Amino acid sequence: MKPLIITAALVGAETTREQNPNLPLTPQEIAEDAYNCVQKGASIIHLHVRDKDGNPTQSVDVFKETIEEIQKKCNPIIQISTGGAVGTPLEERAAPLKLKPEMATLSTGTVNFGKEVFYNPYDYLQSFANDMQKYNVKPEIEVFELGMINNALVMAKKGLIKEPLHFDFVLGVPGAMPAGADELMYLSKKIPDNATWTVAGIGRHELPMANLAILLGGHVRVGFEDNIFFKKGELAASNSQLVERVAKLANILDRPVASIDQAREILTL
Ligand code: KMH
Ligand code: ZN
Image (cartoon, rainbow, N blue to C red; front, top):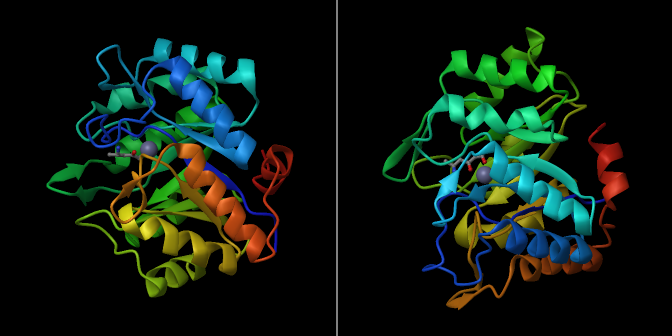
């Protein structure tokens, strides 16, 4: 099995300080948190940013400042979100791609997202994918439902995204695919043999999904975007606490944790 790539999803668009006071918001806080996560074994930083009031933004300037702050301290793979927040205009979502990060997310379908709808019409997917090719950004294909794999395979066939593909199975979002062992194993069998995958289990599903991914040869995403608790009734003290636990689990299960260089190699960056 290849070493385990740990992604830290530090901020997200939906999590608030009211839910977890340890949520990083400013570029400096996010950079400090990213550094701590890298120290504990994260090699990818999945990045959302916030404006001065703490609201989600796709501002190129804020992304630029945050990435520069992170890179002053360490050099993880930066994966910017093109998902933004539910309802962010589609043109705004793609704007930070011009910063040419190594990776960015590409959600390949529309899905219910709690009481809202995370909207991803095909025309825009094509346009996001074109921008990613133009700026040499590797997509992480965000899969909330099975059909999104098929959509990604269609896009790959048309040359809109290049193989080897990398997928993130986001499981346990209310209204979307549940976070069960059957679901994860099924999804992991439905992608091309040369593809890589990671899992983001939402809420209480983060830990069991991480465990299973370590055993199955997948990779793992954790962080406040997906889950604010360390255990039932106990808020996580930091994103790095969640990263550290996954690294410890991998160690117990005898799966090495990927260095940043190894992660770049595994993902063919
Ligand atoms: N905030 C969610 C609606 C991504 O980063 O690409 C979408 C999201 C996915 O977070
Ligand atoms: Zn995200």
